[in-house]
Amino acid sequence: MLAAEAEGIDVQALVDRKAEAFAALRSPLALSLDDFIRTSSAPRHRIGVERLWRGCAAAGDPCRKEYEGLYCVGCEQFYTEDELVEGQCAEHGMEPELVTEENWFFRLSRHADRLRDLITGGALRIEPAARRNEVLALIESGLHDFSVSRSHSSARGWGIPVPDDPSQVVYVWRDALGDYVTSLGYGTDDSLYLAGRTTRR
Ligand SMILES: [Zn+2]
Image (cartoon, rainbow, N blue to C red):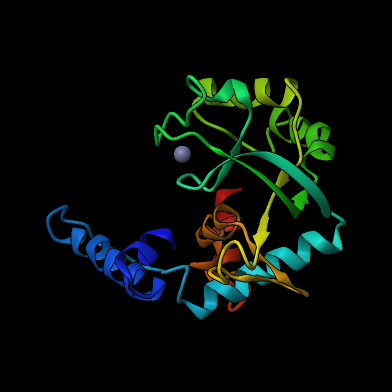
């Protein structure tokens, strides 16, 4: 959004150009694809993201909280002081801004026991073992709730609106990572999605 503003063009025009550049990689990288999904324009993705949100809402997972933190606009992410390198985002070499916002948070903290049981019991398999241990260590260190929305005004309306709350848009990574299931039809035609779940078991 900021890059488009700097160029004086619509956000849509900028992301269309970027998407074309990524899609064009299929030839030099000799990729064959079953599917190519764009999270900003595919209606099936948006429908799936809304369903995922509503499913979590029905389970009582999102809650609204006022939050103040150090925010890197490049990463679209809040950082704690000790995650910064000499006060700057390691990725962007920029000092994050102090931002106060009211957002929706996912109550990850209350899922620690269940996640640990699913992983140690083998229902959720993480390979290789080193990554599994990394995840278990992360759970042991204490899971924190994290914000899963941004204010509509600070995002200038760019993003999928939070169902039943037009003042917020879904946080980019909460939205984008949903494409692993929305590309399989989660929310629109579940047959591929459900087939994938069965095969993995
Ligand atoms: Zn950054």
